[in-house]
Length: 369
Image (cartoon, rainbow, N blue to C red):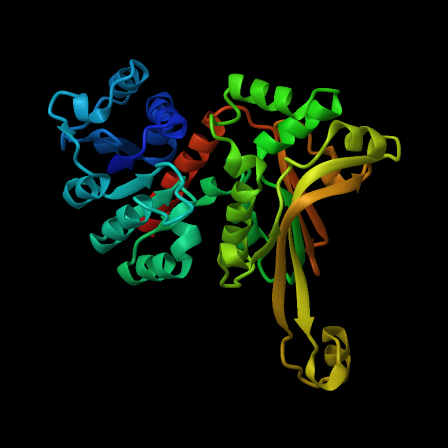
């Protein structure tokens, strides 16, 4: 028996359009493997929105956008209407929020997520802004409403960083997290290591579609800091905001001369995010292993993590030094599962859209239990 999942979508940028393609390309697999059919019943972008309880054609809508037209211009569209209005009116089980990141306020994505949760809709996020501004609020609201809230696409796209940290490192004491979370800055540094200037490397990244016309979030470190905030809240369970990430330094001050000088010393420059634990001492001065041997009980240590984003000169043997070009990577240092190291080479928006689809499946399957 096939279950129809009605979806409202906010945002038709690169990721949103790629998700429309995946809905069609993976339709047979979703039906056969999971017993699920996805039906798009509402879509909003900056031009307005459209609603259709019988289903909106994903490929036709994608072609409409690629022709330079907005959703508000579609037949039956509502030009000038806001995304929150669409979420309040759509006949849907699940909201996919893929609008542009707004670091200043998290809007309009934040209010879209709030509206969906109030209506008892599950939410899948590709947009980091709402989580960075209101992680505790949104997770509590989803739990209170008894619906799913999934956001693995917000951190390193297809690389399942959130899933690994929350599920696969269960019972671990995570001592530290290090990562390269922004492929734009990483690709620019790789090009500079090949002898290109910063300006030329950035220009080529923009031509290739890696970098935005305004690349400041990427090259100044703020995209990386956003992802570090989400990791710290969701995996390390420490409530933090962007103000807790200090310093945040991007790559604009790195010169080709510095790269050549350090390369001669066997070092590579990377924009590295860090969460380093500062642990308050245990009562009685006993380690966990000592307490097991003696039978005495100890109070768990209180861990706080210092957060930073800045360029680092890494020895070539370091795992993160080998995260090159378009790649992103992460290192978890744990007490009982050792050093966990992961990286992904993803190009274009499809892998991030695939992570959105992964979360749609997760929320749908969880809802069946």
